[in-house]
Length: 140
Image (cartoon, rainbow, N blue to C red; front, side, top):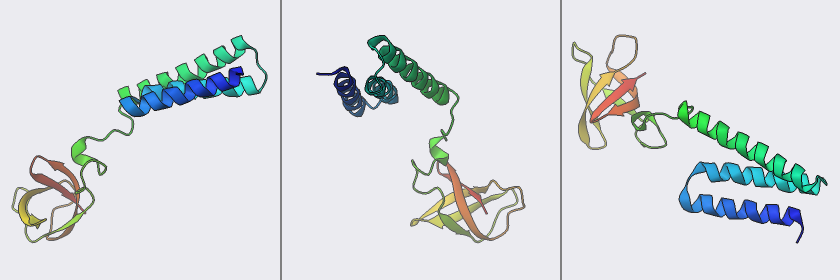
């Protein structure tokens, strides 16, 4: 077996482990193994392959960690359309109270709603932008 094959097998094992655990970090290490395999195909020696795999895998893990720590792309569940199917749906508001609240019918139930837009709320069609508990946060 060649070293390139060993790198590809290690890459496959890490991907399989990542699929069973759901930790994104193992996928980043698999990326490092794939870089080691490419280095082997390019004819680099063993130390060059290991160095390539370590640098690429380590940099990918560090980037993944920093992205998660800084919350890049992570919306709270109440405002994330991937988590809550109601985000982005529209509702009809018949009237608003003086404090910017309303009761709206949505999916067969009456919900409390609050306008989060900067303009004064007027009756009409609004889009659900987030949900806080049982209150819909609406905007045009």
